[in-house]
Image (cartoon, rainbow, N blue to C red; front, side, top):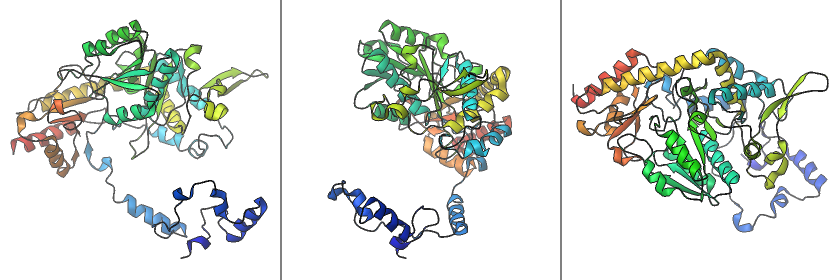
Length: 465
C-alpha cells in the first residue's frame, strides 16, 4: 500500500487533491516545506515500521477487541491492590451522568456550548471544599501526583523560596513526578520515616528545615496506609520556619479523619479516583488542589477555577475566576501550563459526593477502617506473618511482613495469582528496610468472605497446607 496516497477515513484532508489545493493556497510546493525550520539531523527520512491501517470501522473495532481481550480486568479476580488506585463501589448514577454526551465528548468543554458543565464543576468544587474544609478548589488536574507537584510549586511562588521537603515513605512514582515537575528551579529534599510506625521522622525533619524551605509535604493517610499522628507537630515546625504545610489526602477518608486545615494545612491536594470512579488502566485519575480564599494564594493557582456571579438580568452565571492567571491567557508567560484537565472526573466526583452526603461519607469511611482492621488482624494470626507490621493507626492500606514465613513477597503474590487473587504491592525493593512485605488494600467492596478467602490462601501458601 502506498501510504503517501492513502485516503484515510479518519484523517481530515488526506485526499491528495485537497492537499495540493491547500498547499497552493499558502504558496508551498510540498508538505516538507512546512517543516523546513527543523534541523536536518532531527528529521526522520525513512518509513515508519508500522502496520497498514484499517480502512473500515469494523476491522478496526475487531482489532481493538482482540488487543483488549489480552487484558485480565481486576473484576475477574479478587483484588487487594491499592496504593493510590483502589477498588471502590461506583454507584450507577455516577456512570449515567458522566456518560452523557455533553460531558463525555467535550474535551474540557472548550469547543462546545456549556450545557451546564460550568455549574456541574462549580457544584463539585463546592462539595469537595466542604469535605476538605477549604474555600477554593481547582478544576481537576491530570492526576493526584500533578496536583501535589503543582501545590508545591505554588508554595515556592507564595514564599519566594526554592526548596521543598517530601517524605521518603511517598509512593515512588509520585516522588519521581514531583522531582521531575520541580526540576530544575526547585530542590526536592526527602525526610526519613520511622520503620516501626511509617510516620515521618520529626527529628530528621527538624534537621532539614531552613529558610530555603518553601513547604513541607505530607500525606494523611500516607502511601503506606498509616495515619500521620504527628501532623500537627509537623505543620507547626513548617510554620515556625516560614514554610507552608501541604497535605495530600484520600478524600474518601475524610468522613472519619479530620480534614487537613484542622492540623495546620495551608494547601490540600489529592486524588479523586476513590470518589465514584472506576479503576481504569491509565485513566480514571484526577487531582485537586484546595486552599483558603486568600488572594496571595489564589493568584498562584495554575489551574482553572470556576465560580458563580449574579448577572445583569438577576440570574446566576458560572464561569472562570481570575482567568488572567492561566496559561490560556498568558501562554508562555504564565506561571505554569494548565495542560490536560480531568474535568469529567470532577463532575463524577461531584455526583458521588452529592449522593453520599455527610452521613454517607462517614459510613463508607467507618466501613473501610473496620474491614481493613479485620483483615490485618486475621493475617496476623498466620504463623510467621506480622500484620499490621507498622505500629500506628491505618486507614485502608496496611502492611503484612513475611520475613518469618521463609517466603518472599513475590512468591506469595505469584501463588495468590494462581488462586485467582491479586495480592498486595510488593514493597521489598522500594522500601527495603521494611523487609519482605506486602501492602494490602481493603475497602468497602471487600466482604468478610473475600477477606477470609485471602487469609486462608495466604495461610495455605506460607504453611504449605
